[in-house]
Structures are given as C-alpha cells and as structure tokens.
Image (tube, rainbow, N blue to C red; front, side, top):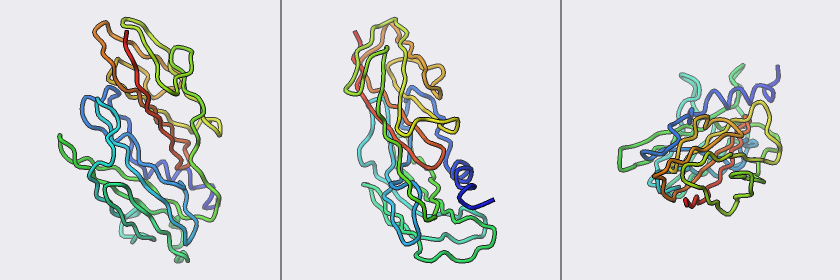
Length: 225
C-alpha cells in the first residue's frame, strides 16, 4: 500500500479527538487548522488554533507551539516556529529514509486559558501532492441560510446543516458548538438545536474535518427571540 493511501488514516490517528461538550461551559480548543493540510517536501504550512468559550471564538490566544514525536523514538522531520498568532511548519526539502515509517510529523499547541492550559495536536503529513482545506459553502439554521447569522425562537427545536466544497464523504467529521441550547447529536450533519425557554443570544460554531487533514470552521451569531 502506498504512503499516499495511508495518509488519511494516519492523519486521523495522530490528531486530537475534539469530541468535547457542545455547550462551551469552559474554554475549549475546537480545531487546529493547517494551510495547506498536507505539506510538500521543502514547503511550509500556516497553523492556527481555534479556541472558543461561551462568548465565541477567542482571537489570538496565548499559545506555545512545538513538534513532538509522531512515533516513539523517532525524531521529527521538519521544524516549527510560532507565537500567539499562529505557527509556521517547514518540511524538509529531502525526506530521510525511515523505512516503513510514514512521513508524518506531529505539531503540538498549548493554550493558556482562565481555567488552565489546554493542549491539542495536529498531524502534518509531508508528501508531494496538492492539498487544500475544504470551503464552507452553506450553513442553514431552521431551513434558511445563516451564513450571516440567524434568529431562533425560545422553546423551539431548530434544524442545523452545513455544506462544503468538496462535498462531504463518509470520512468527514462534524462538530457543532453553542451555549444557546443543546445539540444532542452534535457530531452529526444535519442535526437539531433545542432552544430552552430561558435561552439568550450567543454564538454557533461548526467545525468540519474532511478526514484527510483538511479543516474548515464557521462562527455565526444566534439571536434569540
């Protein structure tokens, strides 16, 4: 089996599981994004961490970046340099012969929050292929386009759905977050938001992972009436 065929499984295995409670009761890392998601030899990728709390996405949180062992006892391939605004991963121009060990590094980011530090990891595959993060093309709330925000009614159950380009596949993973109400199946698409009678305005965040290292996310404002 080629290394290219193995990459999606390796990326999934090496990334943090972001399956966290959807109501954002405390600061939560909801995604780590690499652009591009797969890096060619000698290339670079821009990395960013998406931290959110009940108020929404926290811009430029204090962050420390590092490369950690993707495989026990095996040194990283590339280098990383970063600060609170993000990081740059640089792949080696020439890949060393590592036998059957795939060309994958693991980037680690630690974010300081009011409730303590949080750490997430992101797999960085080094392979000479064209790769890009998916684009979010539609976000519907209650059957209507909500790319610029939406209004929901207290006591209502509202349908949520998201569309991407390229289209989602069986490997795609979803995560919805909002303090406005409860999303029972918040790792599904479509899903439903139950808005309680005492709900107040707040953010809605959706994160889509394509299963090949690509990530796209969107935050909108939900107005409750």
